[in-house]
Image (cartoon, rainbow, N blue to C red):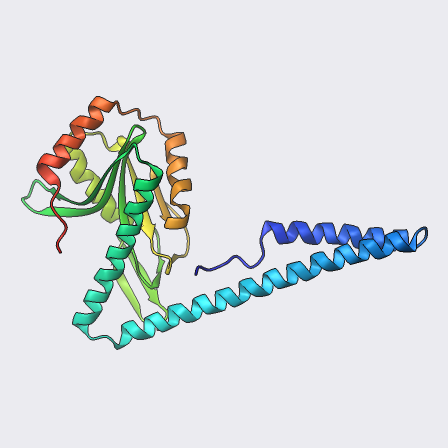
Length: 263
């Protein structure tokens, strides 16, 4: 289940057509009663369809909201340890779903999951998914939260608003988090920053207020829009990675950075 747009282009178009038939029905009253009845019948059918479509979407949205509220109530009742496990399961589910989408839609690309990339200071950073493609190196950061992200995407910290009314004011900006991943990868792989694409994938119940100050080569998206987002970047990309270069990068990832995900 996902949130529906209550009024779409289709409904607007059908209302416009229905109004034309209503107008035609009134005009036809002067010449042909039968034609007028047909036009009124068609317009009535269209208006009933629109009404049923909109009410169905409203019902779906109400159920969607109730599902989110129920999930939040469950999370609020969990103790700290169980809540941590629950969040880890949600995160793992989104990452698996993301990996499945990439594997099915881009079989020619090289996909890496749970990449642990070393930094120069001896620490390491974990990257959810990487996709090597001729159009660039796509680095994915997945966030599966039952909350709304608010703030400026150019800032380091943002605010989380939960359905329960709770807020968390120092939530690390996932775009910035993934930028740090890309910097670490760029340094280790010897690849220019411009050849990376930063994509933040949000869970179905994770919302955001705006796209203000989202940098170039960066997108915020959801699984349902993932293919469209990647297609956008592929079409505008000026990067052309040869198969030899992709193979070299793959060898570096395999040799130095891939670690099995913790079971």
